[in-house]
Length: 398
Image (cartoon, rainbow, N blue to C red):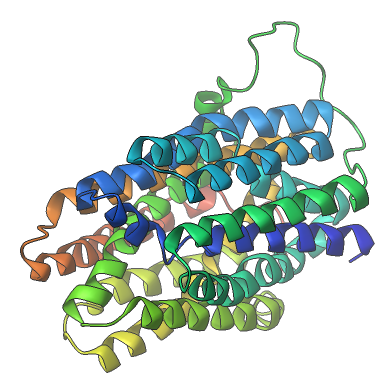
């Protein structure tokens, strides 16, 4: 893996820091503006819906214009949006800031396209494992810690810190990242051909479309869980926001270990599809088991097991999509993947927000059960369709 790979990983790491700083505080920040649980779920959703429409456009434009200019534009949007959110005086400004961050989003998928540009197919599973460990695993350790420090001043300070790290990512991209796109896609003959049509056409791409559907379903069930995770941990188990932050730190540490060390070993013995299916099954079992016993020790134990297997899901999905897409459409395919994953983030919180009752903390376990059952159904669907998304030549023996 060359210098450009490590620069891209650093860019993605600093950008992911700006995202993970917000995870422990977004729910609490919404409450600061007197939002209900359902209204707070919309705060999550508006960002995701905006990204759903924006990401395929950014991905397609990166195939036409190059990775670097689109990465700069999307990072600049994050800088401005999170600064607005951190200084928001009304809920309306906060909602607009989340929309702006979503509509200019797409930096993660463009960075993944850079990795696909520079890493040969036979090395991508290992590369995406290392890339995920650095950009997401390490960020999940440091982001919540920075968030915890920022919370000493205010929740808004967390958004300002997020903006600052996105700005650092922007500077690294501007001054150190070379353009990696060797062959640009043909320019559009129609000015309105900006990639939105790919949201539908992408589902028909051989071996890629089915992965988009699976990742959408995976993402929806996961965000049902994540929306209920924080209030369940705080209200049902009686824990603090500081303890919640430490949980995210533990998740990040496990993700680094599994993605950087375990994936290179596993792909030598198992197929990518087998690893993915095992991870999905473990995720479904973990969701269903978490609320069975209202004990912090039990909950932490199940959560740590969950994080072990959860670390494999997105690296495997990303690698499979990258291997099944041709060289000229890497940005488009990965952009579509991010788009469908983002829109799934819009449905999960709303579903969870509708079935919980703030007056009865016991209801916060219902989304966890639901996420477990639905994830198991996704597991069965992924097994039934495995021949439709397995790459022609697996990187590991089957």
